[in-house]
Amino acid sequence: LDRKMKEAILAYKLSQKYSKDEILERYLNEIGYGNLAYGIESAARTYFDKSARDLNLAEATLLAGLPQSPSAYNPFINFRGAKERQAEVLGLMVRQGYITEVGAEAALKQELRFAALRSDIKAPHFVMYVRDMLEQRFGKARLYQAGFRVYTTLDLSVQRAAEEAARDHIALIRDHD
Image 1 (tube, rainbow, N blue to C red):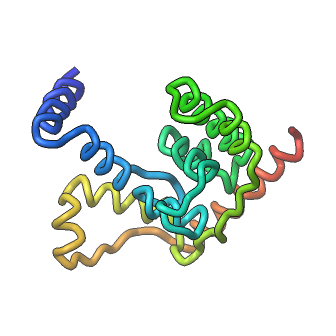
Image 2: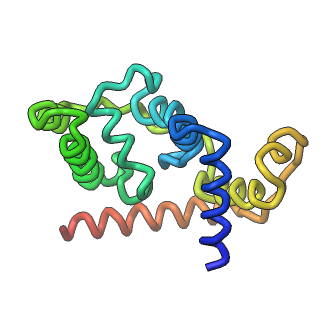
């Protein structure tokens, strides 16, 4: 209840200071889209290797569905789930009058050409977890401008073994579907 009250006060203050379009722009530029992509521009580059302004309707609606649950709708891992979510987004756009039913069907059928997955960060989930903790503790501005050095207890060989075990288990589960 306390958190909800704080959120309501913050929402009120934001609505007094910024227009709805400005709030939406800030939100879209900071929200997580999965696969280490924060903000729509980063997501467009991560998933499609292009700028957000160059996305077509099919690509844009796939990305629009990711923030609800980036891991569940990750198109690299769960393409079917990502497409189902994309269909929901397109359906909402039709109901709100932004696109036609024909346009939605064409976007849903359009082939998506994904970018290659980034692999330059070792233990990305752990790195993002630590980063999120540090952002909460110190704030983004201080964290990225103060020149901190961060040391963790992560054992990379154990991490790699855990990731391999998880991949093997996921493959085993998929084989039984």
